[in-house]
Image (cartoon, rainbow, N blue to C red; front, side, top):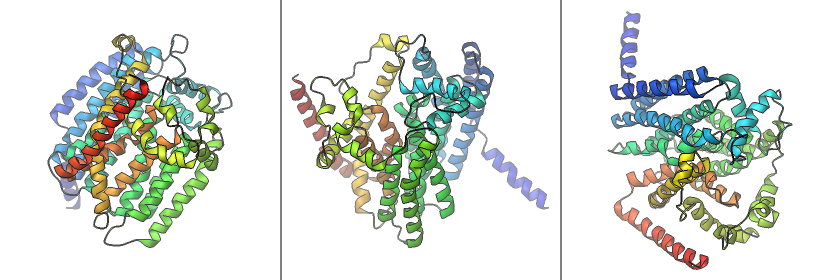
Length: 493
């Protein structure tokens, strides 16, 4: 009897996980094209790469289907289609804009960090995992890609597929937390899943870079703590400490400086995110203590792996004073550079310049929209990166009013429902850390905050009234208009 009952429960679950016919057709098309392409073009580790395409594509589809069933929203069927589109776009961008300039002997544009990581990760393996041959702040990224190459072979397809899968997992987690925060189901809630196809996330997944890996780790580290504090889902403190702690360990190895926003976000959430049912004073104290421990012990990981020692005090000093930042002197600033105009000297200037620097990080490289078609066709990674940065900047311009409307609403209603602040605290703290901690405007750093921005904007679009969105849009677009006038006058155009 028991075996019959167990079997009847098991088979409906298997049928529920069955994939839609449209996804199966697209899957076979993807495998049918990508397999031969990889075998023809990849000299080393081609067969593991082909196998990996099959594993991540099918595994990702099953994860998407499982998330759809768990959240009970039939419209989330789009997750599987988005995943297949992402894989197809990843392979296209690999061959169109990354592989052509990945050989240091033949590339005229060699020296970009992800290019060097691709070569140095393999050199790390050949050097018996000793990083004494390289001078790098955070060597953990070489160990990350080195481990991938060691298991699956040294070729550009493998890390791109692994990065895409990591981003998928983080996106599914963002969707899950977003659906918990907005517990009432409505049409078009599925649009949160579009985070999987955000242009810069697509592009940086292709490369052996840190950006999307850190974005995924920050999503897991902060949202895990936030959903526990908001009590949007049942979870034990030990599980939260383990999940967030593991993410923090990898962050410490890959880019130790990002421990500061993790600490700040979790600490701020312990104060602001308070559910009505219970304050959980003891648990909050433990979580706050864990956040402090992150800041104290996390920096010890980088030198253990062979990187430089991380000094919190020195990092803050460099961030608030351009004179103390050695990298500034190496930059060839353009005439009448806006970025150079906003270099701070001292704490007061760093605070005053932070908002405009945040805006610059959201807008760059706008208003410069030139992307030569000839360079795209030639496979220039710089041209492709600029194209995707431009698309992301346009999305940022459109998304910010929704995020601002949701921020105002979340602050007003925080005593009734503090859960939306989980997304907002995470986003604004990470963006402030990016804009305040990197004095040279590099668009790629904002990628670490990109999933959070989409989550905040989605929350605004799905929960705020038109009047609230309009009230947020007017000051934002007015600010952009005034900024455009200042830009024209300052540049003498």
